Image: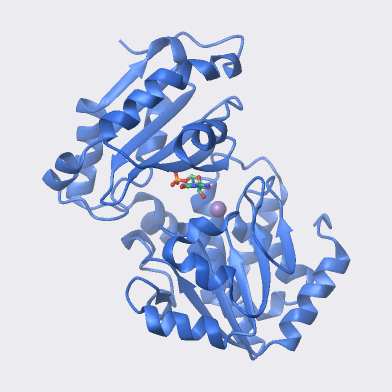
Amino acid sequence: MKNILNPKKVDEFRKLIEKSSRIVITCHMRPDGDAIGSSLGLCGVLRALGKEASVVVPDRAPRSLSFLPGIKEIAVYTQHDPYCARLISDADLIIMCDFNSHYRQGELAPLVEYADCKRILIDHHQEPDVKCDLSFSFSEMSSTCELVFRIIAACGWYQFVDYASSMALLTGLITDTQNFTVNCNDPEIYEIMMRLLEKGADKNRIVDEAIKASSLSALKLSSFAILERLEVLREHRCAVITLSKKDLDEFDYEKGDTEGLVNVPLRIRGIVSSIFLREDPDCIKVSCRSKFDYPVSQICKDLFNGGGHLMAAGGEFKGTLEECRQILLEHIGDYDRYLPQKLDKLEIK
Ligand code: 5GP
Ligand code: MN
């Protein structure tokens, strides 16, 4: 494997781990496969090294990740805040996985940001803005799980990757690349997958559980969204899905039920971006995907207090669903200059 990590930083990482006995690993709110996978995978390796390691997350993981070994041991701040706060205040090292800005931890953010111990960032988002003593930030990587694997390998700790950690790390690799269909041109990610399969990771199970499985109501909600709540902004080559609280209630929406929905409209030939607006209890959650380097991260940053990756980004809007939609309609044209010169015919008949 190419040695893309700075050896001095790897050395520093190893020393920080060696010096610490109580380590907390944490990730962003509304955690996805990569956030949970990188945290659990790293936690397993640190425990194998004899450390007292725990994963603390801002809110619970979606149902689609409940198959992961160790998921039940994760401390969830919205469910057990004093316990989580104690783990953090007792820690002598915090490792922050898969986020680039403190606010992405929601109410857990101040506890981590002002913790009185050393902090390490491991992330693959653009423009990191996190207080830490050591950072591994590579926006070109497919996933934080890929980066965690590379760090573990560089430290010489591959031997400490067990079945549970291999499942966790392969999950992030699979979910962030949508089962190796985006951000998957680097041949080395297949070598990493091979190394994880050698440790027992069950790729079939991960794809079944984390990508494909759905409840009947979630499947119906997705179909309803495409059939009734999808609009195409022709001149901007943009597809927009809006789901109100009422829509969600009608289909007994549970967290995670709309995972992957935003990818669907990108299948329409000629569509360049897909934007999904969902009315959550505390905000309008914005989720975007695109093709051809059309910068949805910029749209999320400019309009929705968010960011992410160039072609997979998200944000939050405080206001009504309709206000959010109007802001999008008003400004989407500002980004037409990023549309590719030559476009497929729009196939929306
Ligand atoms: P998703 O659409 O799956 O929620 O998120 C896609 C990408 O955008 C992920 O890399 C995620 O970390 C990032 N993202 C999602 N929501 C937010 C947000 O509210 N703020 C920022 N900065 N990034 C987000
Ligand atoms: Mn990620």
